[in-house]
Image 1: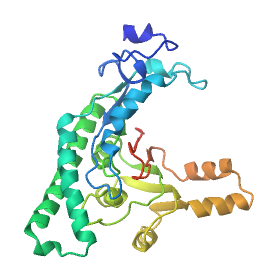
Image 2: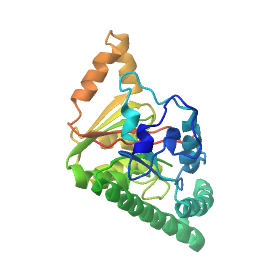
Image 3: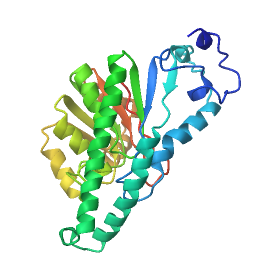
Amino acid sequence: MSDLLRHDPNSVGNPNNNVFGLPTSEENAKLIILTVPWEVTVSYAAGTARAPEAIFKAGFQVDLFDAQMPDAWKQGFFMRPSDRKILMKSDYLRKEAELYIDYISHGEDVAANQFMTKTLREVNEGSRFLNQWVYDQAKSLLDKGKLVAMVGGDHSTPLGYMKAIAEKEGDFGILQIDAHCDLRESYEGFDYSHASIMYNVLKEIPAMKTLIQLGIRDFSQSEWEYIQQTNGRVIPYTDKDIRDRQFEGESWKQLCDEIVSRLPEKYLSVLMWTDSIPNCVRTPAHP
């Protein structure tokens, strides 16, 4: 910690240090950034699994000073390096998934093809493995009293993290900033698809009491119908709703105040960039 307190935040970022050029270790940092290099089920463009590495490198160009919280960096941030075994597993299963997606896109019957049946099973098993791995990593850090953030990877990655949060903190909510609902029961046959993350959260984490989806503009009929069946557990603020209310005179501050008032005391913020952008980032914040 002494090295951190002596650090000059105005100096050039030292590439031999950790994220943002800070001389931190996992032991002396308050906030640990868990990296999950996984993109098996993306349906448009790959590249998201290598987002953590790109973010780490770019972080050396970021100024640490924040006028509202000038000494926040002194708490210490530490970004775990990506697990190479997880990345290799992702790369392998991504190739398998690409073959499978191409196969079903032509209307072929999966049950009639033993190879494709095996591929689907392997992808689903791999996703369950990833969920457990993320849960184990997050739980271990939370048990040590750390604040935990997470960077992916495709949209499917934070399920295990959210399960660990639920066990540690009890009831909580989620503020999801996204163009998509991600409420499909499954997508392309994948049980833990990037397009199903919020469906799986609602299904598997009873402690997640309120999901506010902000900026939604692209969703299926089945997802919209599902929202209506959640009895207010899912609250959508579609892009159209927001624009309409602003056109009628409401300020962005009024909308933000309303959104925050509908969240429980403890909540995660989840930013989900579209899968069409390489190096997709997802950063759930600890309550």
